[in-house]
Image (cartoon, rainbow, N blue to C red):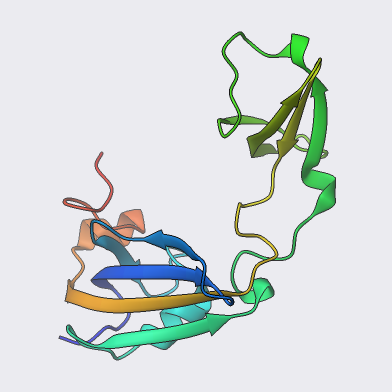
Length: 158
């Protein structure tokens, strides 16, 4: 079966910067629902359309087609007294952005009485290379299509 709308696609992948620094190298396969369900980047979906198990794709994406440009308005410095004890560099937390919408922040550094947070995706602003290997393709179930994601092994569990 080839990748098409409403197929469950199993992939292994490696993500590097344009300079070759490895950012992620999948230990376990990932599974996503193909066909415009926002389960992966649009350019990745387009590159995988029609591919079959065993096929490989290497895709170079500019930052704007991957995780976007860095948005410096998502960088914040908050007094350490506003955090519970045990906050650590590299930890994540959710809080409101400037518009009051939920935003995930990463603790970048703790400097004296201040905690420096970044709401950008860690790969924002980077040109990336995705090396993708199609492991399996199957028809998605009606329930997966209704829920807009894959269920079961390596997928979403309810």
